[in-house]
Length: 132
Image 1: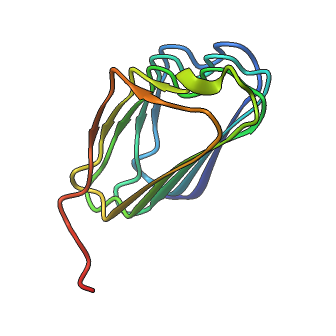
Image 2: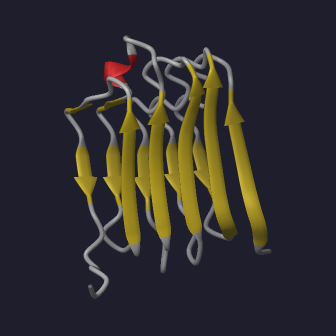
């Protein structure tokens, strides 16, 4: 059945390591990595909503929050946002080895507020460009 919103909170080290989260039927997916959830989403795969939006963010000082994260867009995935809000000086590996397959999404925003670097990663941005 279709779900309006799906919320995933991660606040433990490697708590979703290697997991697959299927949010295809969600209207909106919200994923928050908080506290000391180091490498929380390591090698986790998120199957994004077919007809909805997805928001990924950090809160607090998790290290390597999205390291190894795999995002796979669905049919008609709308807006996808990955936001890193961290003052941690060790956060430079937050986007290391990520794979974002978002060619079919409507819009993708990567918002980095901190020291994160994109390293050894593959990011397929949306093919669609809205008219100016």
